[in-house]
Image 1 (cartoon, rainbow, N blue to C red):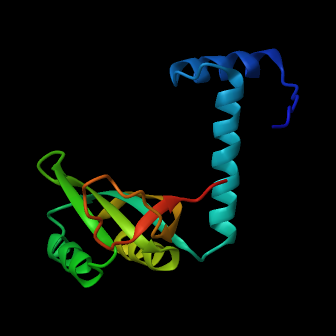
Image 2: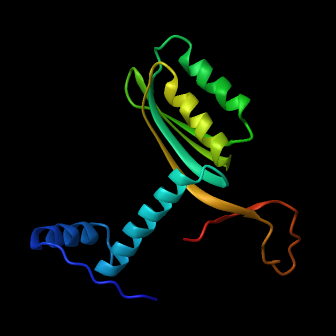
Length: 157
């Protein structure tokens, strides 16, 4: 483990302490590690368009937009290998929130999310990607058979 020292002005340090406390970090170091880890992974995801991921796509849409709900459903069926599940929430008389859990190749997940975002009537769409590495590593549980299936381990960084 390496020790890094940073300097910042008093107000920024105080604001950071408030942020870290509000998020229940036990130390500045833990909060900084998470910020750095997120920044490194975001940069890596932007630079590398390959590999696999799990993702959350959340978006708000106006369900009165002609045919939109049907198109969104059809898009999920068309790319059913990417969509693990979708939750639908009625926000008011016009707007709905949907959040979909996705998994698959990063380019395919991004393309699916971009297609959803581009639909007329979809607003506030956000995609959160987490790189994973497909593998078959598992521990056999005593007395329980393990059926062959793929595991997705978070990428280490």
